[in-house]
Length: 373
Ligand SMILES: [Cu+2]
Image 1 (cartoon, rainbow, N blue to C red):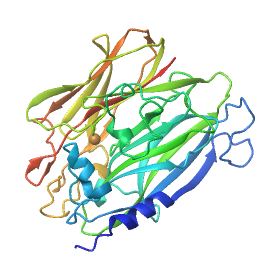
Image 2 (image 1 turned 120 degrees about the vertical axis):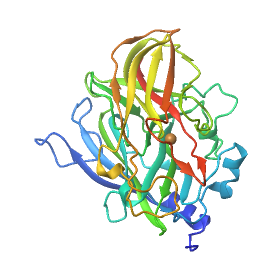
Image 3 (image 1 turned 180 degrees about the horizontal axis):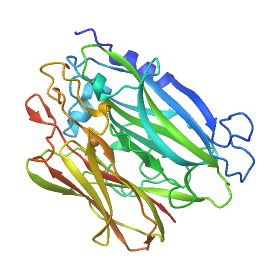
Image 4 (image 1 turned 30 degrees about the vertical axis):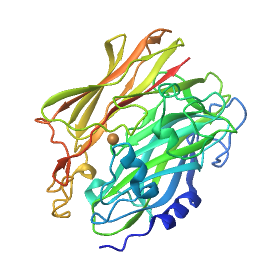
């Protein structure tokens, strides 16, 4: 059980292997699928799945792998548990350039393309996608004294002032669809750089290579009638690891309000909680405009294999985990001076929290909101 791969090999793999996979277009009457843009101004929607990795996730009995043996994480009070990998990967593949991303959804795949899910012992614990480029700045961390998500790349050219967190996923794999209330997309310019924070967990007894995937939909950057959105990351533990200590019973976690400096339209939002979480609300000026509700075990992929790893305490015995978080479409207006915030609601009588080594697993309460200036 102790034959885990060493970190340097892994880092080399992670940094070099960035592979594109399937590409398609939704409109059947057009040219063969392409990853590039079509005619300038075209509203044709392209889809592309990008596979990132492979990431070798150590078996459940082996120490987790993280940069510098987890020293950076310990420095900020976080820990890397057995059977986990936590990996910043900079300059990863973009699905397109001079385009607008209209939909994104993360996934996890074995090297043969099969889906890797809780039911077979693999967790897409977290992924965060970040973009560096002209006009990019992290709304809620750009003015913070330090921002760990940005610093973790150990690259002075990646800062919260020029790099923004624009997409994220937990294991529930909530899709972001920016076209539900209108023609919106997240802009990707030719010079932009994409980076990922990847955290994966293995509950099996075997070191397992997997790819993180993102299914992107996009249109040309000048698509007629389309507007650009900006992301706002609202987090009860913002600019750090996002992790907070778990409590028991009914309790809430709140973010620091973000005061908008722009006016526009609220387009979409979705929350992320850990097991034990019931719902997450987004507030504008103190009143909720979106409730992102957690559902548990709505598909067999989110139910532990009853036979998994006795002694692994993350679940086991057929426990259910968060399988969906509601995605909100908003449409209401945003004005300069408005304050935006989130509140995460936990209820451990309703939904058990996960434990590890006899202790409650850290929890999160964060929401990602998109507005069109
Ligand atoms: Cu999380």
